[in-house]
Amino acid sequence: MELQNKKEINYYISIANMALKESNVDFAIENYEMVLKDEPNNIIALHNLGVCYLMKNEYSKAADFFRKAINNGFNSEETNFYLMKALFESGKYEECIKIKVNEMYFMEMNMLLLRSYLKLKEFSKASEILNLLKLNGFSNQELNLIEQIIKIKK
Image (cartoon, rainbow, N blue to C red; front, side, top):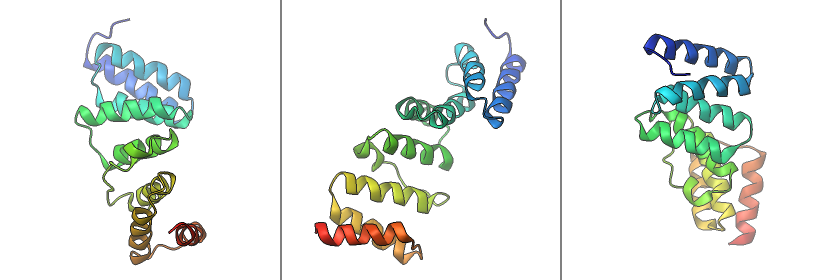
């Protein structure tokens, strides 16, 4: 089915957004994909498909959609955070560490960076991130445990 105009595209995006809010992920995916058939670079559909696949734990697919959204101009802090999360969860640590940390998701993104550096056995980089988090007042059980691991590995 080819969507005839912007009004129809917005209708399917609205339906998909409502489905996503209700956690009806598969129905949301169907509707976002209908939009992309007509408008392949629709940044809202691309970003939200990434969210859908993140919710389904299909991290590589999620990362692909977040990348497409970013490449088409939807370079939001949220999209970058979700891309980093999808890359980390799909084991793409080298790609994960290339994503720039933003202010809105400072703690979450630095934790993903820290874990990525640990997975890559780059303990000095992990130590730098750990110190940055501590300097910014972040402290929790996980950080304390990671600090102990880094001390042992150095």
